[in-house]
Length: 231
Image 1 (cartoon, rainbow, N blue to C red):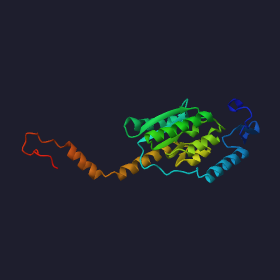
Image 2 (cartoon, one colour):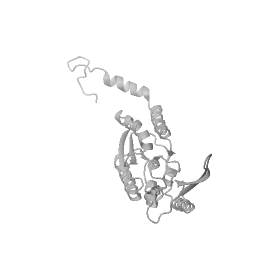
Image 3 (spheres, rainbow, N blue to C red):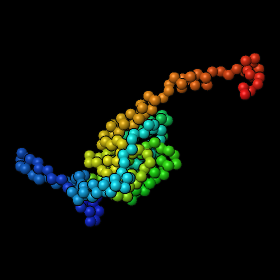
Image 4 (cartoon, helix red, strand yellow):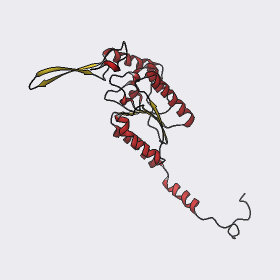
């Protein structure tokens, strides 16, 4: 197990497994783990309690529409984002959901904090309907999404949050209106919003508008054209 992804002074989260080999017998396997240590889990819980007491910790409801989506994605791609990107890019190409992508180093708390601040600015100025964060493509044992500044920035987003998570949820995932480690489940959540938007559309009225706007106009010299303004 190489500790190159551990910063100096950080505890190394590890997992113990017992395996049995018919030739070699039982052996203890030690590997890196995404599960936080007890101290880290306690710190996450304390951060949540503090934000709840301040009234800042709140899960927003699903958006009623999804015309603009701001996505924080891994800088060098990632397996989860790669599985979801094509579907979202297709929605963008079909002019259904305008997708704004912000690549970021998901293991750098400073970079993630800055990206979430950018997301908040984007939502403020464009009225984006939701923010997607691919929290699952971080390194094993990464703690960027438990950093207090990152969690606070996620709390301060004025748009619903959806996360494509890893096998172990983070505090940012707990803030999302929908979070899943399965790309297809995140895609289904997005399509659920689009289906709701379609169901609420007054199709009969839209059809009448289309009929009126596509009807050929009467020539100005024709008797049916009004000679006076209707007011």
